[in-house]
Every structure is written in C-alpha cells, then in structure tokens.
Image (tube, rainbow, N blue to C red; front, side, top):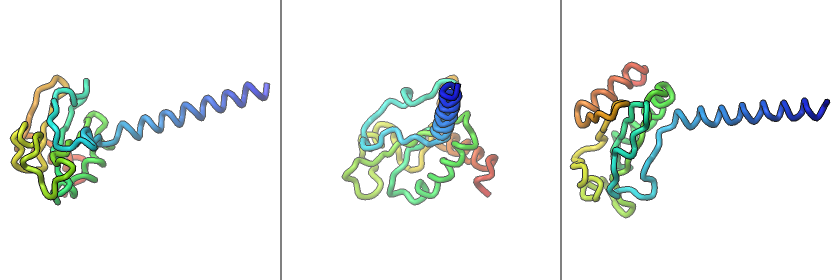
Length: 145
C-alpha cells in the first residue's frame, strides 16, 4: 500500500514539474536564429498556428532593441496569445549594426527594431503599423507609460 501511495505522489510531482516547465516556456521570447545571425530565412516558417506571431528584427548593437528586450519578455508572459520571436540581423563577425547582412538585405531592413506581425490567419503587417501595434500591446499591458 505504501509503495502505491509513494508512486502516486511521484506522479503528481512529475505532472506539476512538467506543467511548470511548459508554462515557463510558453511565456518566453524565442531567438530563432541564435548562432546563425544574419542568414536569410523564411518568415512564414516562424508563424505559430492559432497565435498572433510577432517577429522583431534586432541587432545586439542597437540600444533601443536592448531596452525593448525585457519589455517583450514581460509582454510574452502577460499575453500567452502572442508568440514573440526575435531575429538577429547581425552576422557573428559584425561590429555594429550589420545593415549589409544577407538577412537585412533580404527584408530591406533599414532600421531596428523592425517588426512583422502575423495574425493567426497569416496576414502580415510590418513597418510602422506593426511597430504601433506592438507599442499598443505594451501600453495595454502597463509596460509603457
């Protein structure tokens, strides 16, 4: 009898740990090209079914991008309906914002942060309209004043 109770508690504990790990991952911003910065990619493959997908093109040498990073992390925790993904435009050897990277050239990135927002149905918005939408979500979440 004691073994059955011990096994039951272990099962409950494992289920709790798995639930906590899944919840933690759900609220995290994903860097999609870590270690492969600056390489071309297909944004359509980054979309998540049933969610609004927010893609931020950034550079680790961009001060506004660095200030925005923790806000996007917090937004991802507060808004589980959003899948927030970061795409580094810089090639690994770049010193400064890498405007000439294949990725920046592919999407015509001329300023960072640069956003593309996909609706759950796949309609894309980018540029100023996407930036305004992200700003609105940050304000609604109480992350911008």
